[in-house]
Length: 310
Ligand SMILES: [Zn+2]
Image (cartoon, rainbow, N blue to C red; front, side):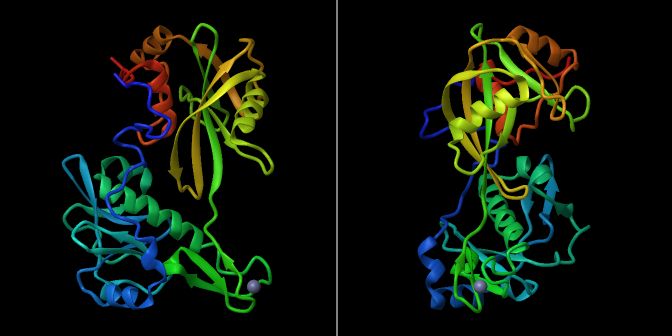
C-alpha cells in the first residue's frame, strides 16, 4: 500500500524521474581549474545527448547509460552533472551520439523508454542532462540583443558575448491534480489528443502572475466546469520534455456536475475505487505510465498499486 507522503519528502515511485545518485557540486561550476582538471581526467564520464536521446545498454529488464571519456566526446555545449561517491566527475555534452549503437544491447534511448529501467544514479543523470541539453539547443542567442551567447557556470547558464547578460535554463511550471468529490471519487479525463481508453488526472501550465494553487482551480474549472477548494501540494517531478516541472496537487470538488471543454477534453467522469479497479481489470481503461507523477497521484488516491488487465 502507498501511504500518503509527507509534504517535504514525497515518496514518488521507484520508476519516476525523482531520483539521483550524484552530488550536483554547484560550487565546482565556477572553479575553472578544477573543471579543466576533471575534463583532462580519462576516468571522467561524459553522457552525450542528441535530440533528447542518449546511448543505453539494455539487458534483462534493466538499462544503464553508456558514457564516453572526455577525449571521445563530440564538440558541443558541455555541462557538469556532478560527482559520485568515488569522486568520479560526470558531464553531459550536446552533440552527435557515439558510434557504438548495435553492440551488446546498446541502442539510442530517451527518458520515456530508458527512464523507468535505469538505477537511481543513471535516472538522475539522464533527467538532468536532457533538461540542460534541451535548453542549450534553443538558447544560442541573447534574448536582449540577439548576439551569440556562450555557456557559463559549467553549462548551467549562458552569457551574452556582447552585453554580458547572464541567462538561466528555462523551466516551465505545470500543475497536475487529483480532484476528488465529496464521496472520495477521483476525476479522470481523456485528453482530446490521446488514444481511446487512456485517461489520467487533469493538468495544465501555470500562467504568468498566477500561483500554482490558482492554476489548479482555473484549469479544473476550464476543462471540466468543476469548482474546487482545499488545494494541497502533493509532490513534484522534473519533466524535461522539453522543459517542464510538474507540481502535483490534491483538490476537493464542491460540486460534481461535469461540463467538459470539448477542445481539450474528450471525456471526463468520476471514478470510485471499485469503478477504477473494474475498468482496469477489464482493460476498458489504460493508465499513464509508471514514470509519471500522474500515475503516482492516482495510486496515492487509490491506496496502492493499480491492478493490471486480467
Ligand atoms: Zn546580449
